[in-house]
Amino acid sequence: MGNRLREARQKVKDDPTASLKAQALLDRVVTAGGIYPQPMLIDQFSNLSRMINQADQKIGRSAFEFYDDLMKEMNSIRGELDRISGK
Image (cartoon, rainbow, N blue to C red; front, side):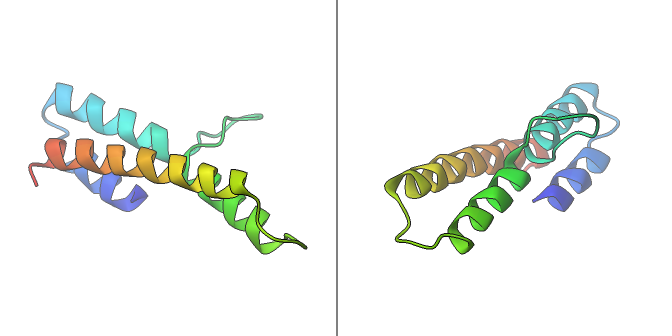
């Protein structure tokens, strides 16, 4: 999804409004650099994967709820990306 967002940002670079929207979407997906940045969608999925794969017991309900929340966020971003890129 990060690559698709970068491509969309490149595609709409001549339209300032669409370019800002594409950058805002990218910022929701990819964690910014710097000291102690807030983990964004890609890193949150990685954290969930690590949590599930390292569990030594049955996966708790909170993991499934976290997954559902991440999927809602991803679907929201996809919908906005489709509107920006005209798909």
